[in-house]
Image (cartoon, rainbow, N blue to C red):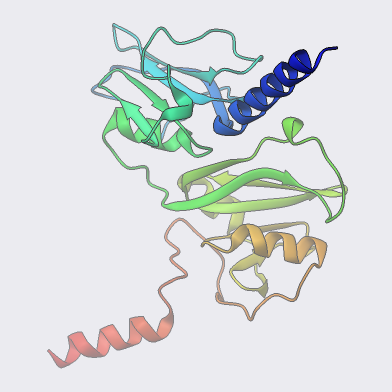
Length: 256
């Protein structure tokens, strides 16, 4: 190989490496959901079947012409069945906005696109208001293929939920309507914002620290802080409003 050929090979390798670094990938929800019409799209009604697809350059969703179906899929993955016939996702690596949309379609960049795109199409906010990580976690030091374990973030959960399955923990998002039925009997307040079942196999949580506290509890990676709740989670629980604040507000109103 000549010096010129070697230089050309090095240059091509560098360009390929640089290009791969410039284009981050995301995990997307792939689904087709029937809707009554674009004007009567209930954001709290979820698709029957959702496939999680990793290694996407963008998440894309659109409402069909007769407004009876919402379709969402992954752009750029080898698992993607089709590519969008749109200019919205054509320049993902140079996108300056987290989401580019019009009235009928959206191109979104991130692991939390499921709720963001649905809120765009419905122009409504879901009942749940808590962000939750959705993924399976393993004991520290255990090596896993992240392509087989895509991570998402839901933004409209009633509560975050985690359950121990053999040597791993499955973290998920509970819809607002299901919080009471799933978490209502969890009365073991092990620390932080966690409310767990008596046998310690499953826990519910609300707040920004849930994923870290799930890992700390199930894998004993650190000591949990003192409990911040003293009653089970239900559809009306707001742990960030503590009893002292409520008491102070009551006295203020009473004095008025």
